[in-house]
Image (tube, rainbow, N blue to C red; front, top):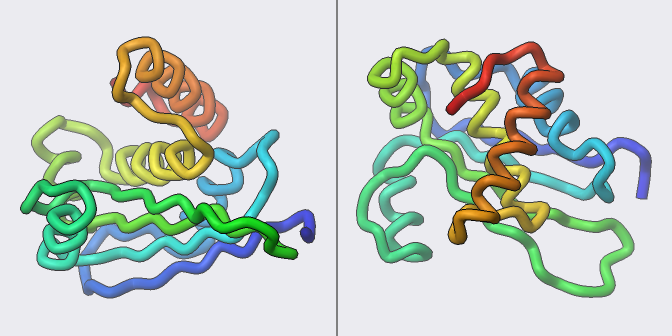
Length: 148
């Protein structure tokens, strides 16, 4: 594997405030620090696509901020970590409702999603505490305040 993972960005919605692909890639790289790098695709979508995917894979028929789809195949010459699907309108709405800087909220969603691809989760309280601590650490390194 090369030292630089492949980070694909697909924009499927015209929405204001979506960070540039280079910015998204930088946030992914920050979240991957110390981990085995691999290919990641980030797909920026509208609410309808997010709702369909969230309904199909999580049985929750509504749009959500970020979905993570880890890739679980074996024996690849180049590791593939998985895909992130980020719903631009939901991220923008949450930032406004929670009185957060939109750019900082985008960074949080990217870091959060990448950590899921790396195996972190927040189902159990102790796992959530571990994941949130890692998010805070990464976001602080990037110059962002505590998202919680």
